[in-house]
Length: 279
Ligand SMILES: [Zn+2]
Image (cartoon, rainbow, N blue to C red; front, side, top):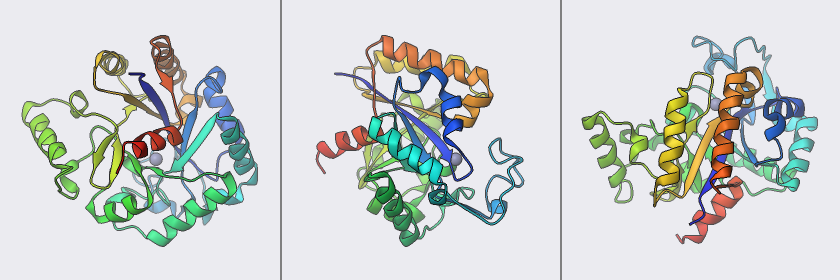
């Protein structure tokens, strides 16, 4: 079994430039594909992490009104070129990045409009979404799975807020057992896993606040596991750009995986893989 790794990079928006991406990934750019989950339209920052929680990304950003990613032609042209070269792939990261956006009912027509625009400009058929704040609930689940095939979340995602069904029952039992035994979900949760009508992918965070030992152990567990086929590393380009410690952790993790024969893939390759498993 060839093991695969996928890099998930969230929060790309109208406020960013191609230089942000190139400067963030330095010598790693072009070495492995980077998958950007973009926010189509920043709107009303008071509903996002900008206010109150003083989130790293939004802090100091002054957004007047609406910032539409499709109007940033420099960024869109860059993405289109780099997707064609196989350096980049894209998925959706909510609509406006409101707090816990996908834990609430979502407007299907707005999401459809955003992915249709992106598909047209970028020549892509987007089937992957990552959840802002890493969680979604049964309030948005039907809409999400009618438009997407793969949902990227975190190992700490709260499964009890989701729709219960035969395919998700094992997740519920695992989550309850983990809680009971005081163990992190990552020790027993596999990705990508079929839940209801879609697949879910959990991520290992690569960030400046991350305990390096946790990452190294998760990587070694993945390499030794006879059943785990795909590992997802979740990061943010602005964190890689501004914090050398994050960049070094990413560099070391990618190096270890490449040395062990792991193949880094795009979101499209993950989508093709789960779709070929049959529905
Ligand atoms: Zn985000």
